[in-house]
Length: 219
Image (cartoon, rainbow, N blue to C red; front, side, top):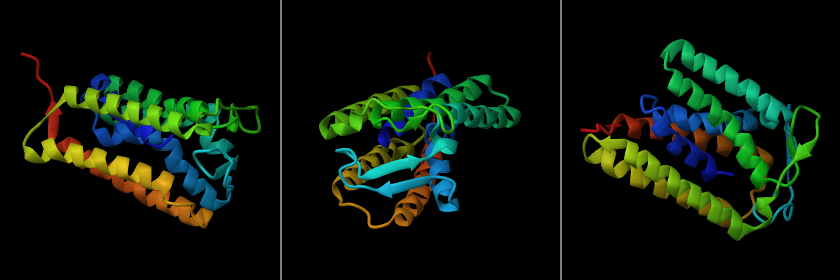
């Protein structure tokens, strides 16, 4: 999954309207924020293996510390506890916890059986990535749903808040198609470094956009 995780962040807003979108996106993306760092540190491994699945050439050979179900629960608990410590907002805390764990669920749907239940444990995966059309239909559908829920929950303070959301979503879609159809990357290091930079920029940008919007007030 890629934009499917962004979809979860957008769709989380109705459940935690006081939590900034940057945090709501960072939660379902959190395992993918850890993964490239762990790869660079040598703690986890990935190979470029064209044909591994129809959708992606990446073979995730070893990533128990960022992507096992057990560790996703650990990371979710740590992140949620830190949020609750500073924000004192239970709706946001619970939503962030669920968001982090949702990453494993969506990846279980999309990956072939390479998603560990726990470090060195059994690996599961339904394999949606074996169908390009199926993957893109599901992810784009989830993104549309998430954005609609976000837009219904918030309102723009001014033009920036109104139009920046649409520009942001279009950039996500362009990046999604570029990643899928732009050719195979030549190095693992290039992939993980690009991932770190891109996700940091996208999360920061979402927080800026959300600051120009506010909750819908029912009258």
